[in-house]
Image 1 (cartoon, rainbow, N blue to C red):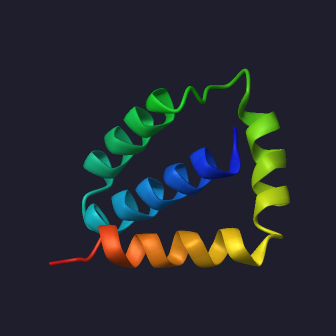
Image 2 (tube, helix red, strand yellow):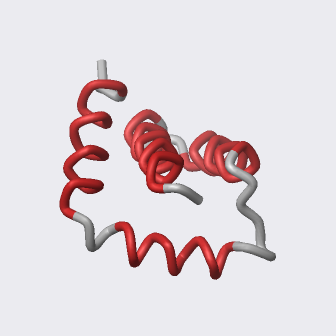
Length: 76
């Protein structure tokens, strides 16, 4: 997964957590759909987990995720 795709995944993941923080069933369904959209499954999750570790060391990536989450996921 590229950095840009990781950023998009992370923003959507954070949005889902914000939107469905009080409805675990809807949150779980949305997260499963997100993983499906990005092609994440049991076969490649370990590789994805390694990328998370690598990308989270990059302050610019984290800053971008935080900024885009604020823009795209404002809780109403």
